[in-house]
Image 1 (tube, one colour):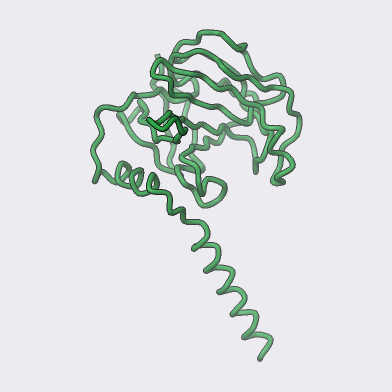
Image 2: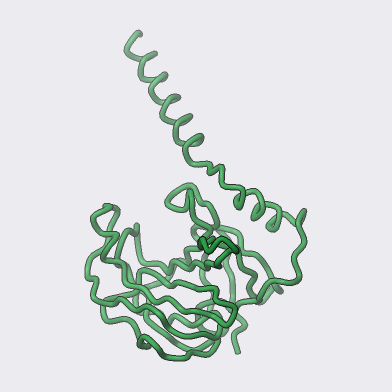
Amino acid sequence: MQARNLSIISLVTVALCFFSCSVSNNPLRRQIKGLLNGTIKDDTSFIYVLPFENNQAHLLVQGYFGKFSHKERAALDFKMKSGTKVLAARDGVVIRVKEDGEKGGLKKKYRSQGNNIVIRHADSSRSGYWHLQKDGALVNMGDSVKQGQVIGLSGNTGYTSGPHLHFIVWTSAMNRQWQQVATRFITSKGIKYLRPWKWYRSLNP
């Protein structure tokens, strides 16, 4: 009986730790929550296209400050088969390309293997596309890209639990520190901030 009680206590402790440790105190988290539930209105931010082909639908498996691996990240994870075409969500210039990573999995040692493309936009913000397949970049550093242009092929490299596309946007504040930001997208159901565990269909040009 004592062993059973200890097991129950252990399970409760693990559960409490999971839920308490999975919530970020980042003030951006509260702001994004307000944008998602409509208590904060925003009609001034740039509107992005979804980073996949027109009329395709993908499930958003993790959203901003998600409990799995986005505890401190305002990032989005789209479930996506390896080899799926990845599109630029906004015009810009390619400032980073990595495509030599070969491995992926739920071990921190794989983080450096994550293939990615980073694009700088006209307002100096940057968008990143992660976990591309090996040799999966279809652009080079210095290339100018248009919104909706195919830039790479999705994969499963880096710190990942399965094939998906990790998308994130940063902007530089007055103190020159980079800050992640939430982004609005054109979808088949209107212009939205995206929520996890929902399917989104693109209306890309």
